[in-house]
Amino acid sequence: MFSAFFRALGQLGDRRFRRVVFLGILLALALLFGVYVLFLQVIWWLSPDTIDLPVIGPITGLHTILGWTSVFFMLGLSVFLMVPVASAFTGFFLEDVADAVEDRHYPGLPPAMPVTLAEGLRQSVNFLGLVIAVNVGALFLYPLVGPGIPVLFWAVNGYLLGREYFSLVALRRLPANEVKAMRRRNRWTLWAAGTLMAAPLSVPILNLAIPVLGVATFTHLYHQLADAGR
Image (tube, rainbow, N blue to C red; front, top):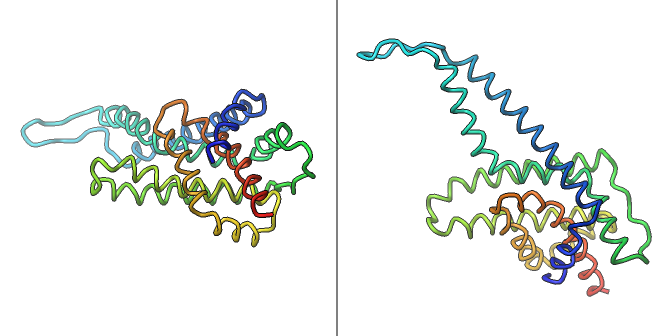
């Protein structure tokens, strides 16, 4: 597991890796900006520009106040959403990352099964929905665990990342039923590897490279597990 991680880390400077990181961040920022504009428009539709408070009297400019408040709200929300959104978009470019790893480290392999645009879109949407749903659910548990919040964050996201990244990589080489069986046999290894990916999610800037690093790590891990199972 650690060898897979460090081999992936050593390839982060690869041109194809940088391209995927850039595209994932660019698309994620565009989506988050679009969500913010829509959110701001809803605020303007639903709130009055002036309210009349007892004793104080009328207060004007409420739209402006709520608008500026929403900026800070979206900045805080983006801390939680930027990584899963960037991860989802990275699913569109999985082939580039996995191919770059296999070209350098596994040159004798036969061509992988291509991931169609429809399948890549389905996987990305499913992954995004799953990550957001589970993390929103975890938000309700965070107050109960106190100082254990980082551990819960890593455990939840480690499970998700391990499951999804392995599936994304393995489906290029195996039918879905074999991927499920292999994932079941190695579930603890995959969870541990996913947790290794989840730990840097709380580190700004570095967390934006995690989708690419995760795909690269799990490409190595898949081949290691496949070789061990032969």
